[in-house]
Length: 599
Image (cartoon, rainbow, N blue to C red):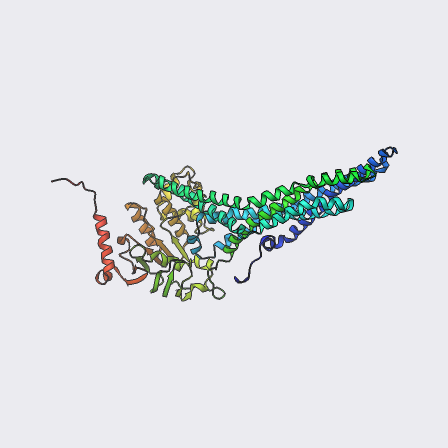
């Protein structure tokens, strides 16, 4: 669907998302309509029974069951059929809702794996959480309950009004007058121009508040250490107040219309009683009029529930549309482009050809016409000041973002012509801040190669110098990593390194992979990398320059531009930025804590 083509909203959009479950939902709604019909029938049959009884007793004829036996049977059968249809409708709608919930979440998660990483930097964690959990859950509730309720809410008043007209058209018109007025008021309230705007503002404020809460909890240790509790809580308080205000604004915006709606909606008795008195005064037979009045008082009171359901569904539809809009915004996010049918590189040299790229919304190039070539099997280092573009180079190589200009090739193949799965199968990336999943340590390592045997996992762990630590744990490799499982930063890093080693990819990217290792372990890890990187194309993002002095190529990034390329000795002669960085590293390594003494 083109972006210019406006997407459907509400129930129509939900039916599109339902896909193969559309037939089940249609059947559920049909059964809901039938249940509403069977629900009304007993009212009419009981009215007929009451009318017969009053007429016979008032005339002195007495009562005979044969006069009402068929009506009693119809009443009983209708009650049973109502229960059967209502139950079947609920089962079908809930089953379809859970299936749609599953399929929609899977669709969203699949989409999130195929879009630019810019989506995650431009949206808060709270907003993404709200979309994947709350917005999708709202859709499930709406499908499981509201869609069938709206079908019944339309059918019940319709059939009820038909029955009322059959009984007495005059009382019907009188009883419908306040309902019609109340619905005119409701329609005017729901069509107020800023209703959707208030709902969206409330949802946005809630997402921002949840994002602040998550940030507050995750950063609690830093907040306590630096005494920032007051300021951090102030942010939460501000966002909480904004959300509260948005809720109040939405409630106040709808208050007048809803108040008038309920006032007229409950005023049927005030209209019916005067009409009933007039009819009784002008009727020759109380036996004819009295059952009608009782029937109308009971049935009109029963109209309140389905009509209120219709109103609630209308309000829920506005909320659903806000959630659907956010879901559609994610589904409409441009995916990482794939040109052609998907090629497979057979060589693993790397080429950046005039690559320019700016992060979404920044307006400043993080990479500016960067060009270089790295031979297959070579060891290469990316160095430079913070913000120079080192990590950006690695992320662009992984096709996390679409470049604005130029081309990136692996083995002469443009990465835009390589499928995502093929690309990531050829690259192992060890992040500086390694993420460990809530799973066993063995499974965390095996993510690098799901088919690896236990012995291969152990070999990778030994190479990453983490085997002894894992073996010392009570459950060894079966230890489940949770929030309560204490692992140091260095231990997490070495588990991630073992994961990359097990993957055995032809291209390895190390983002300061030894950052958390002590001197002894760093030496062992460097030796392991020397063995395992043989024949592979290696890119190291380095801040500690002593670890990359033997690299085949050192690329100096500065301000998004490639300032120089060469070996250590060459750059010491030709690149001032590199010389300054080496000098700064030497000063750091020679630094020691001294106590200043006065003269």
